[in-house]
Length: 357
Image 1 (cartoon, rainbow, N blue to C red):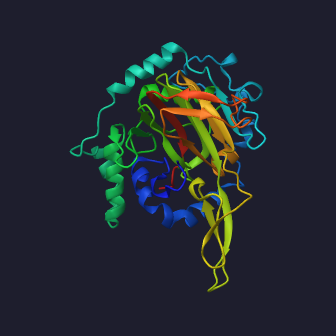
Image 2 (spheres, rainbow, N blue to C red; image 1 turned 180 degrees about the horizontal axis):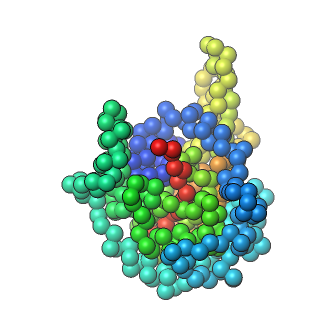
Image 3 (cartoon, rainbow, N blue to C red; image 1 turned 120 degrees about the vertical axis):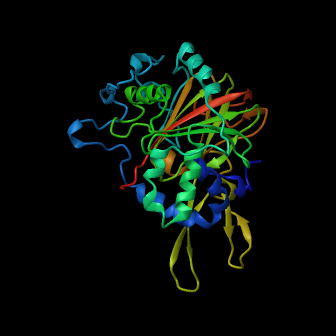
């Protein structure tokens, strides 16, 4: 049911982008493909060569933060290649820990979530951020976009088209810090090796899903380093799916220039024939590259590199979701498991790239 609904797909970047890209998806597909491909040959976690660490999941990546990391249920407080890497013939850059946060830490977070204020259109912008935007006075549209993002930052907001509540915390904003509880979680993700210390999480998007709600196939995009970590809370399990993005080359008949187009899951397998009609490509699978059951009691999923750059991720809608593809679900290889959906929170951590001033 997720296929064929291109207009609902979104990039989960920041609140403004969540809505703006709903309108610009088709117009910007070529540009986004070019931006992402330009990053595909770079090591997304390469740090200062002096640190002597080549493996981002090596425990020597751990750092000491002013706010101490939480203790986790991971053996040695480490996300390890041997224990947590999902073994899949199609993807090798996804890590999953069913038991990550302790029950007490999970409850601390769940108790904090209702204290997040709700967005109001009457909210004002902090003066410090206003002062730092005077250089945009000649570009009023950019200033308006940033002001809207600032008003939504750190507040529960109802997404009109996606019909779910989200709360965005952007630590890259001037004179803004993540709340202490999110700082500790960010420190924890660095300490266990999910993020390198040179690229710690500075951007958190919290989604509240009612029973049966999901999110359309999307990528997080080139605004972030190519690494995402999501913590699931609230008790409900869901099936997290990764779909391959296809890049096809089209030749412009008018000037002979070869163009690249990013293909999202909704139009995977559709080719244009010479007369302009559409046909299904027989070499494109209708199955996801990988499924992972995300348990709702403090689990952690991390995906990076190929899984981040060349795949879309999705959680389907539906009160019941059957995992039927044998060998596709990384933590349920036999398949056929029926997942009953309920109320769920997801906390997604990324490292947002900071543009030079």
